[in-house]
Image (cartoon, rainbow, N blue to C red; front, side, top):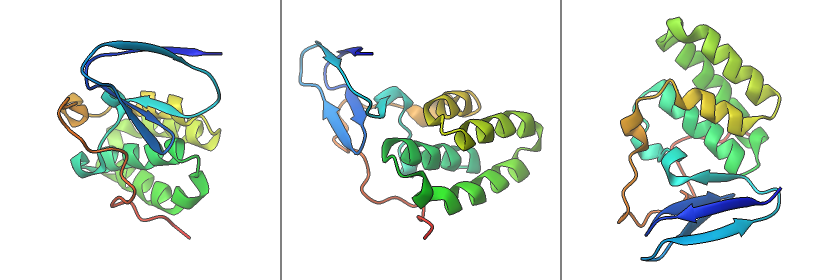
Length: 142
């Protein structure tokens, strides 16, 4: 099913391991295919992740965008355990996220986990020229 995107000036769209940055004018386009996509408002820069929930989000985000869940499995498990220890009141929500990740439903897992994270972590800066990090502080297992 094609996805229609209406991007504002300088808005970013993360497509797999690539970043599409709009120019100075609003643009509308349609994307067809089965590529993982995140809008900038849903992308959490690893450098902005200050707690275990945010680091877990970044890990799942990389699993989704890079289509390489196995390479992040060790980090994911470590961060899930840490997030559960740090936020025991969120145990049922984290179990639900884990079920989605286990079922390869990474986008849905990100959407559910985002509800548990402070909104300011997802601050979008139009002048920011950084793209998808090629390396981040999440160590790949393996």
